[in-house]
Length: 272
Length: 271
Image 1 (cartoon, rainbow over the protein chains, first blue to last red):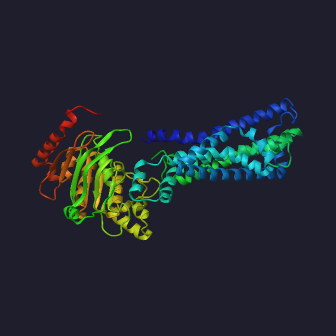
Image 2 (tube, each protein chain N blue to C red):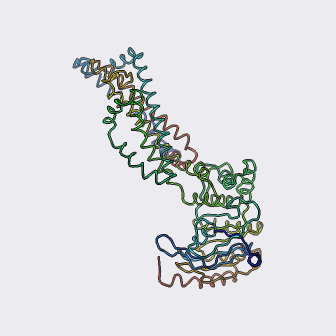
């Protein structure tokens, strides 16, 4: 009996440990191979810097890079907040009036399917650079919020809606007590996508603005370092961007889990 | 939909009526005639079952009485509390599914009708707790719906329909999705509640046995468009209980009701 239970529990414990350990091993092996190839072949840093060089650059240039990181993160945050508020507000407006939805939805789609990299140079002509970058982040990120929120608002249980009607709920009451809570899992899903996308939007706009000058975000650093053949700093900035993306995703996933953990299927443990 | 009793003569004839439908029909937008013409009078305090095959318009009739949809023709009258009442106050509705809000606690689910009616929070919570106690779920007020079994969820739904102290309780196949043991228990609990609260109950079901066991009157409906095939009064020693379920009188009534239902399943099928 005991042997049997240890057999059944062991793989699941080992499995979860492996899910952490295996990617780390792959990461370490990849870095080691990279370092080795660069050293053995004596590849110069302006062609391919070794991981150790990138790491040292990250420390050496931290003053510049951290400044750029802060700039990019601030842009991303502004774009994300604008996308979140704009996407949810527009979805609510669509939900209240079919006519508004019919009139505006095609343009939301047009905005979504036009590559932002093509819009960015235009925005940079008409808007101040900082504003243009935030608008780019907004354009890329707002559509998933809009479409997910719309989906959520339309997914309200028909009988629950009937119940609200029976008890004479006003529109604001129905919105607050029924539609918004029912749409919450969808909204959070949309925001999770929007977080990563607003970083992409910010980076795209910074790169587009790079040649124009005054920016100081991480993407701008990458472009600038490229022109100066400062390849280690390019990699260091890229590393920070990846980390920023991972942290944004992680934070939003955590918030989503905390908000939904008591009731939504997506956040419930498998043992239930 | 809900007409106030106006002329004194009409009032005299309706005083004892909780619900009256006269020549009511319902045709859906796609042209399907779901109901009628249907005439039905339900006295105050009566427990009646609407019994019929799937798609015969029983649920449609219930939604018309609740005011959730409008009749295509005919009149629907529902007697409600006099004096200042919140909309829907006079009617409680139990759906086929528990229809609970998964994102909030059992107590908040039960309090919902009061909250929508602007009842202060403290009073609403007290009344919600009392309603939960009446269905035997006092200890589960803080639980979330997903933590409850199917039968318990249905009890919560029942508590929610009772929390406004409605005159009329409309129940749309509320126990259809439950296992038989749970259903028998809830049948008994519902009868006990009906006896103690004295509400008018209109109970939609497709179970002959359930309808005979529960109600004073079984109204058998035909297949679409739903009309009344038979109106059978169930008379037995009250309060009825488990012994009624095994009595000869019970099986006689079941046979009689089944016979009234027979044209629906022997005739040409519309399903």
